[in-house]
Length: 291
Ligand code: R5P
Image (cartoon, rainbow, N blue to C red; front, side, top):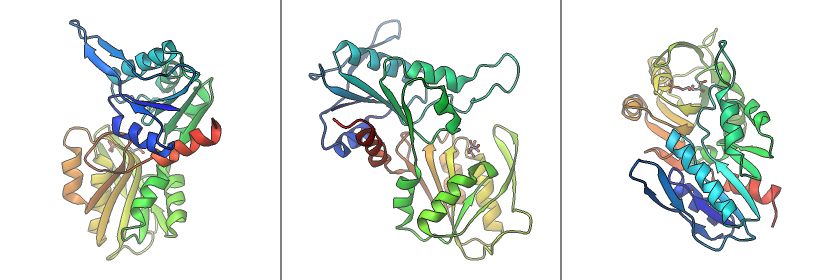
């Protein structure tokens, strides 16, 4: 098996290649044409071999690079192409909320899988998105990677900033054998949220080491407000932990100012990327597609 890392996921791709028993790893040669279009070329002897292409699609340019990589790998004669998209962009528009809108998650899934024999992604906004793929598609979880980090830190209580994150928080609470609770969240607009403790106040917070767990941190609005709320109620230490750390604009600095530590996995490049989903992605590939 060969592993090729796109520019959005080079380090993670190399980690995946190590988890696949030191599979040969490479990155494509890339340059821009005068009109800005991307040129790329993959190296290595890929003919007749299985190839894993790893590329998050946070930006539109990342998506174009992934589509070109898949086509290049097919042209190079790969036996099977496994596409790993650690962060699948556009996945949050997973329904048509108003007439005239696309189901963006479906549009992306269908294109990403075009030249793939299977797709592996991590912590989709909604696992329903898996149903849009026509090829075999798998979702790895960021929980084991964050769990490996949290085991080495003080944790008294796991907190989900909203009801939507309850399943994830429960899974982490089970893994670490700790209690959990969920806050009530009301989104005002894409940058602002209002948060409150659950009815009845939940467990005692005074002096506790709390982990705020989310699938994605985008503007940071949710985590900043959640951390402020918890600290107002006497929490001793707040760790913000997420699978996908987008940290738009000054989100990282704003969260840093109100928390004690920020942890994320390596599905996206960011300053909090301390845990890796590589073992979990590799496990799926080895289990589903043995040589
Ligand atoms: C919401 O459904 C998600 O789980 C996150 O809580 C949300 O996307 C975080 O966004 P932000 O960082 O902009 O508050």
